[in-house]
Image (tube, rainbow, N blue to C red; front, side, top):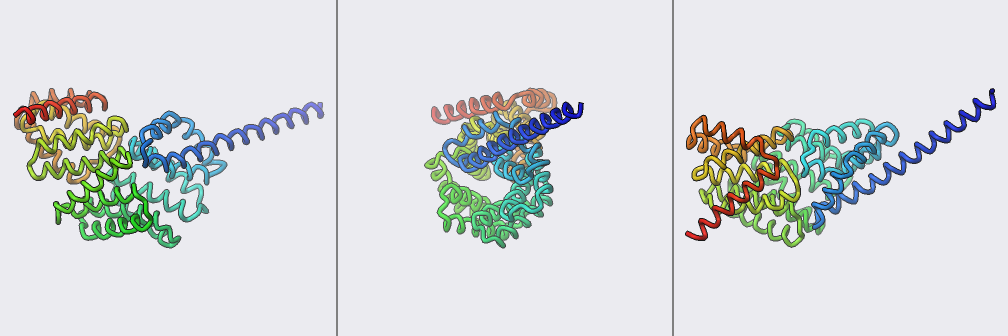
Amino acid sequence: MLETIREFGLDQLDASREAKEAHERHTGYFVTMAEQANVESNRQEQTAWLDRLDAELDNLRSAMDWALHHQPRSALRIAAALHPLWDVRTHLSEGRHWLEQASARDQDAPATLRAAALNGIGNLAMTQGDLATAAARCEESLHLFRAEGDLAGVAATLGNLGSLAHRQGDIPRAERCQTEALQLWRQLGRREWVAGSSLNLGVAVGDRDPDRAEELWAESLTEFEAIGNSLGIAAASLNLGESALERGEHEQAARWYARALRPLQELKSPHYTAAGLSGLAVAVASRNAEPATRLFAAANALCETTGAALSPPEATLYEQGRTVALTQLGDAKFTTAWEAGRALSLDEAVAEALALADELAAEADGG
């Protein structure tokens, strides 16, 4: 009897060892995948890598869940490396959850890894409109990166702090942060990050020097097109569309927003798409109030579903355009169009927006 119990115990021990080894192999595989995707997702294969990560999301969750209890360092590495997925595909709350949980479990992580996680939390919090958390986490991140002499980390965090300062109305600080970030990326020779930093600097100087902002966005767009970075192309186009709106050039704005929505449709990015739909709706609201209202509603639904918030300038234009559409249609027609727009899927809303933009472009070219 004792021998039988002993053999059973050894069998269970072997099974436990095998399970542990299987979990370790599984987790190691997804650490490697996430970190490779983090690098590749800034390049031409951006959409393909995001699709691959989305397809493996349940496995990635399983790996992080096991690692939290057995290898917290691995959980933190995966969560930090998955920032492009959390951001572009708008898994904002989930990304913050994994980053916060893994950071709490691995208090002894290398400073640069902790700083990357903090910067990731700060960026996601800013997208959600949680500016207090965003500021606290990004400041912690910047302190750690500076102490370690990690110039790329410093530049990335300064970019977030500059965007945050702009949202908070501290334009001088926004300019300082983005200017230093751009200098560092140029020093490091990181082409794709130079393009992104130029775009951010354009936002920071836009109120003071709109012509300079347009130059920076045009430069960014050219560079992103050369690199093949779809998100960068969309972001630059969104800014150029917003600038055209502020000048009252609604037809040109519609072209820019359509230019942004095409790559965003492939990227399947809800919160960036919401900005494009909203901007295009503003551009057409005075002449096409009913379809504009559907687009406003679709953008509103995307923001509600994902927990994302439009930036202050985007939100201001949204409210102005929505008011124009309501005035044109009256309460009853506006409500009907609004409900129809909220029922649209992301793909349906983008298809409707692009068809509207194409129609307007054809009218303008024909006239």
